[in-house]
Length: 97
Image (cartoon, rainbow, N blue to C red; front, side, top):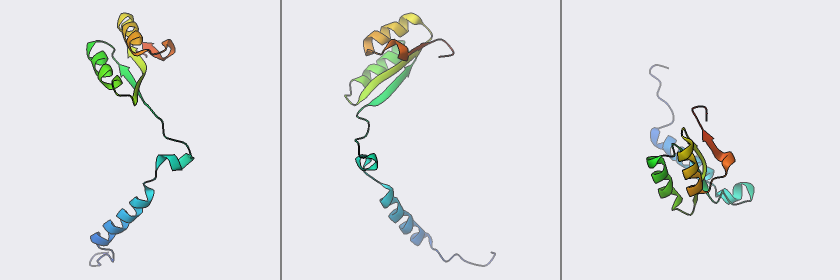
């Protein structure tokens, strides 16, 4: 290979890659015939002060839903569960959560 130059220039390679990428960008509705998920599911690990604050800021957006919670302390977990209306089966406590 030493001394041989490639027959494909960088410019041609980039043009071909851009053309291929243009065909891979597809509307999510057309992939399976159904709309994409309407809400983003958010899980909060650490439901104390900062976790609840950040979760509240995210929950202000209609396209985001707090879907799961995890914390070491039951009182913090229950307070966050009530605030975000997360079902008990989606709340996890302890180090193994």
